[in-house]
Amino acid sequence: MPWVDVLWTDENERHLLTNGVSRDEAEYAIRHPIGYDVSESTGRPIVFGYTEAGRKIVVVFEQVDKVTVYPITAYDVD
Image (tube, rainbow, N blue to C red):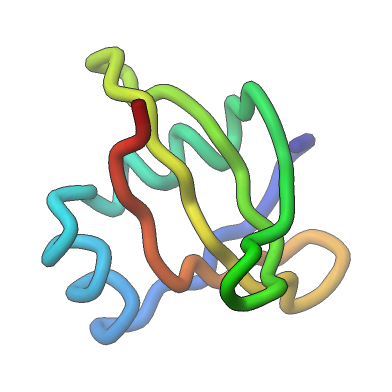
């Protein structure tokens, strides 16, 4: 994904943290993706990526506009 703005609120940041994914980890994966898909359960776009520490995660997001995404959730994947 080329340069993208990531929209954060207390709500989405707190939700990611409940899954053990920090804001910085999610942003890194969004900006350095290794793959894209669509969530089977919600139909939202998802991005696969690694954190700087090497954890593989998926980030589910909403596309707000051409350059802005709003992370909904993120979690580790095998």
